[in-house]
Length: 82
Image 1 (cartoon, helix red, strand yellow):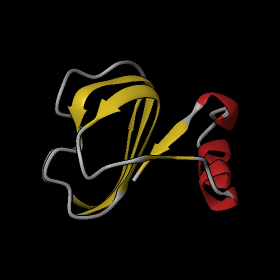
Image 2: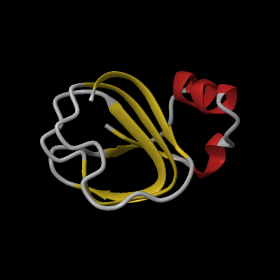
Image 3: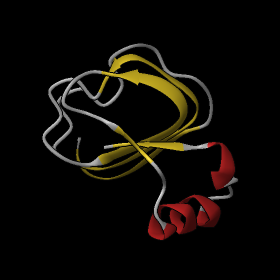
């Protein structure tokens, strides 16, 4: 992925966001294991998932919450993987 926003309303399998360069992925469910492997940039937000190094779990910022709200999601259940 090299930019833009992808919204997935449900669970994804393993390796979500592999080779991601920039952009945003919103998964309204479980993003699987080994997510964002080989990621250069960008953000993945999901209810849960197991990232692979160097991706770390962070709390949502106000801009992330606003993005989720503008797309019809409740940000309370989401986690940011960056």
